[in-house]
Length: 497
Ligand code: MN
Image (cartoon, rainbow, N blue to C red; front, side, top):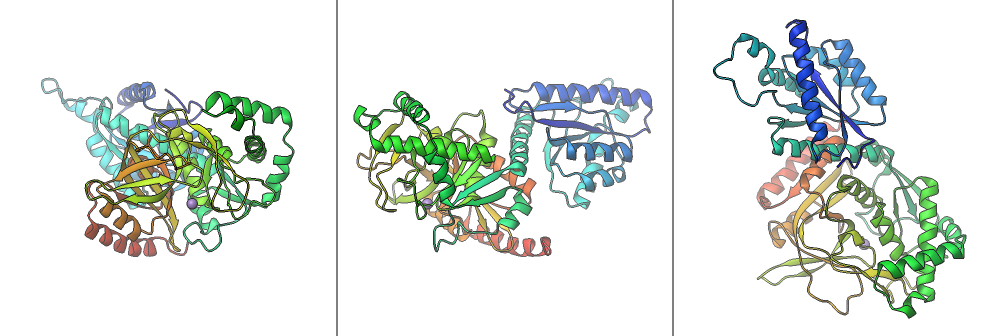
């Protein structure tokens, strides 16, 4: 299903004039077949657009500059059907601002043993044409994606599908605006960071507002809009009649309407709040944040704009895939040696897209923040595979850390009035938490059961940021070593940026 049908990747084939017009005609025809096949692959979520075969430096440069300005184009897939002398690509690749994937494939799957002749050999040269192209990309130090395999190979096409989702998310981050209501939670370190560096690297921009600006919008909400939301709450969630008619729910609806209106007027797709700065709001926005997240907005609590942006980016990658994506926090451990687990939750703000069943809408006091009792959706998550992702400002660079998880069923916790998720981190809790802490990974994460580590790796490569993976293969000694080498690599590679 084309969930981003307005977005395109351009299928670009490299060749040259050496082989004559007939061969070039066949190259174009074959390329069109492959482009069409990728476009029709059910898991590729964007439109794959066939582009005429490139045979000169001028044509390559022109295509790359067109890709830069075409808003619908999120990236290129390049393929060398024949040999395409790669000096021709230098000017174009140096100017290209969109990510690209080098598809190292060939038209025929098998060698036609009985009929193969030199004409066939001249036409089907990707085995060495792809190497020439690979050399110039490496010589230019461009971190592109490489996928190897026949174009019918479901594993190869699956990798392309993941990369296109990351490319759409990278495109989203170029246009992403984050609204910050209030500043950071006082004294907290990991949620801080350099917003200028973040914009240079990850392109999104962060806009600060006094909470009073939001309060004004909340107070402008009319009764009709509030009543409409209360009816929706009654339909979507389990809630008692008396609670549904309470002042607390009415106030939660007012906050939701005001927040949504503020974000939409400003073109914001992500936001942060902080319980330390709620002046003029009667309760900490819980239900409002949960419902906005479910509609695709990114969120980070306590002023955490990096996680807010990350949650939005992960939600864009995950669009249309089964499984939810949420803001998350590692809250408390189950350290039973027979099966160690992490209980993930937040004060209120976990996205109902991860819920196993219909949430209940409840009103309970909050032990911090000294405000009125806030409304929140309470549920447990579905089980299955998941990831936690964190992004931190390490001073000289941003680091992403990903941990793969096995999300398990939550036992009943009758007295816990918040949404919750229970998981076993891979390879095991001791190793995963050890590695996460060595990496400086935050307590806040983007959590998803819809996407895996490969999506995040493709995104991190596009943004040119450090990426550390904690999964079934993690060994602490190797992980420490990787961190140490990365310190040196990024110090040298980043120059003065
Ligand atoms: Mn928190």
